[in-house]
Image (cartoon, rainbow, N blue to C red):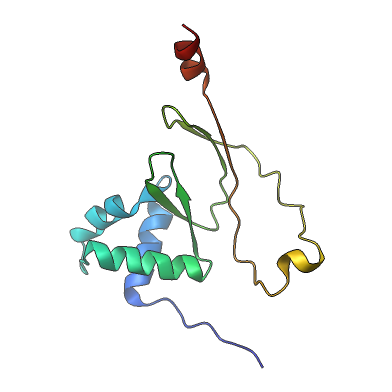
Length: 133
């Protein structure tokens, strides 16, 4: 028995297109502001509801900054980060060290893997220097 996944709705297609056109990750609030001037404006709660549905389908990923802000990007943009816990500066890692890692045995039992995120947290050079001064 195969399960078919419905195509994204028109509004979800708009969100996906905006995320794909963005130069980097974008917050739900910024996405809302961007789409507010478009042909199909939608409320902030609707934007977040559709972002969650797209994430649940494995079409987008979400990353949370130390400030709590959530940033979204399409999963085909495979980016991972090193983030300073003090100032929030984020640096994209040049490559993902997890691509060849396979979950073994029972670790993934019952899961259909959609995407992964990887983030390292630390202190950037500027924050280290400021704290040691």
